[in-house]
Length: 398
Ligand SMILES: Cc1ncc(COP(=O)(O)O)c(C=O)c1O
Image 1: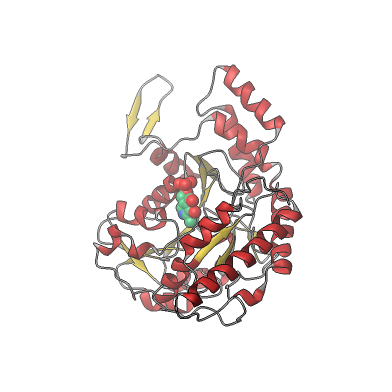
Image 2: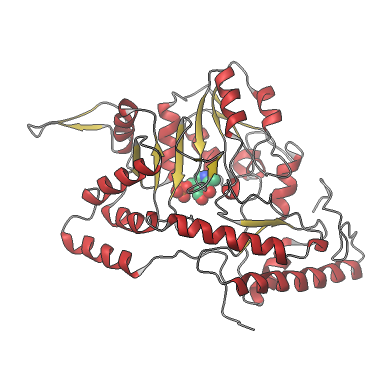
């Protein structure tokens, strides 16, 4: 058995890209410049010709997207409680109120059958998330937004390379924010981009991106809005160019590895597996939800001890201290809470070998069986044992 530590993710940066970065470093121009312009042009082509502006993060993309959508104090923005906390923090930072709608048990994304009932006269925008790169149903989502004349700021942080009904995420829709953070399917170390609707909106994005400053040919400048500092460096853009050229290959490899997980993972262990989607999802992550009697910390520690990294993406946002202080409490969004308590991200990245998937599946089975036996011995209620098939009960109090 190969005992080399297997992290849950690792970027694939090739030598050509590393050499390209060295060239940028030697060029004398390292912040936003020709590489950024080239990367933006390639991204725009990738997204069917829509305007794209690169940024230093997708958090910045969401902040700018909300500003462009006119979201401000007193407004409500509807989003999911099952995401990275940035999704909700940007709403709070805009002075607006996050309105959470529970997620669907299977897709783990915002439940579109519940969304419309959460719309009020104060709702200004919808902010959906494609968790693990599995897209929210864009046909339904855009129909709801259209009926209520709402802007959509897509948190597509995890969606690079994903698609909906044959069209790339980002190639249609309203404002789309994508992350190039180190863990993402396309990375620039840190970074992101915002896909926009037209040249005028792109120009406003540029102002929000860099201090609201306009420069004139005579060397003078003016500031017309309180923009932030969100520009991407040429170093990052050069990494992105190397990554974009290989994105299709990366996505194909991720899909192959995900298929193998479905073939190898013992379905009798009581875990909830993700939706088996090999056309829309970019397989940013392969996540299981552990049965209620398994303590996630113990599972992670045991897997780690056996040389396998396991991540947590993510606990429910509304139960984090900041959001509890706003009045959210346990029981508000039971499905997100259930998933947030038990979700575990197994290793998945393009450089993984097929045998690595087999090793993760075998070790998961061993670990889950051992922890189940331990729970039984301790007299804990084993709702879905290593031998059982029932999935974890909602609200089991784990
Ligand atoms: C769903 C989601 N939203 C927003 C972000 C923020 O992206 P960034 O780290 O590029 O700011 C992330 C990053 O992990 C994310 O996963």
